[in-house]
Image 1 (cartoon, rainbow, N blue to C red):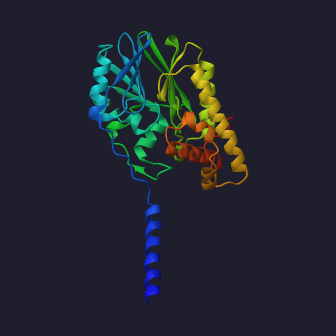
Image 2: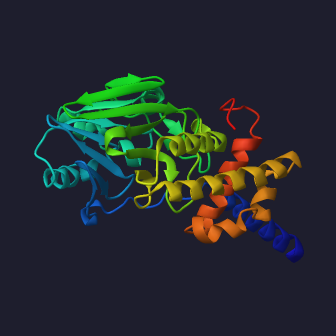
Image 3: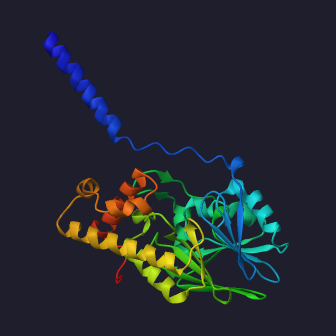
Amino acid sequence: MLRIGITAIATTMLLAGAAIAQQPPAAPPPPDFSKVEIKTTDLGDNIYMLEGQGGNITVAVAKDGIIMVDGEYAPLHDKIKAAISTVSNQPIKYLIDTHFHGDHTGGNAPFAKDGVTIVSEINVKNRLAAGTTNGLTGVNTPPAPPDALPSKTYTKTHQIRLLGRVADLKHIENAHTDGDTYVWFKTANVLSTGDTFTNGHYPNIDFANGGNIKGMIAATDVYLKLTNAKSRIVPGHGPLADKAALMEYRTMLVTARDRMAKLVKEGKSEDDVVAAKPFADLDAKWAPSELAARNFIRVVWHSLADKKETRKGAT
């Protein structure tokens, strides 16, 4: 009887442990926005990079208004506007979403309330309207309210013109997501990449929502053709970059793709490749944490192993 009781207790404990192990990781606590400070960097030619909490912001001042690229989180709206007011008293006329993630689009609703036109590639509006699921964590993001949706959408290319300022928008297919936009301020030699380029650390590749490492590499190829040694590149995250930093980033992506392609061809599973740590030598520079290193392995594996191809023709 005692032996049966001990066995039953042990089995119960094992089942409980398994249930706990299967639970998705808890979401990180929300940022304390009251402590966030907005840092402004002058890029020349009346263009500025703003850093706060979330994706980097680009502010391009024209003679009759301002073009913003990305808007971080809604609770930072007032702080962002205050930072912009120190460099220009022109009204913000356009806010461009480089993709749908909340750390870039959270400011949509409050800026739209100010009368700002929100612009994005069509897939951004579709993803925000439908809600999304994180492929790594399984966390669901509910549909955004109507006032947070872009009011102007485009496919392939678009151009925004103000007096003395032109912003060229172009869609990069299936890179960080399926709705990525880069913004090129040609006369100022400033490029805003969104999260197709994260300076100094591994990117997230949202494979569940159209992202693919092949598209990420294709994006860097486009950027390298656009830019020169004097270009200022505003990444989605990380410090202001130049062409040399972008080239180093591309080399990392190509190395990761090639190593993972070999493992996928050998039939390795997601768990197999995580255990193998194929990017261990890259982690010292590109992974701020063990979790970041593991997640990058997973997203690259999904890019190459998932049966449904999210992008065709990438090299």
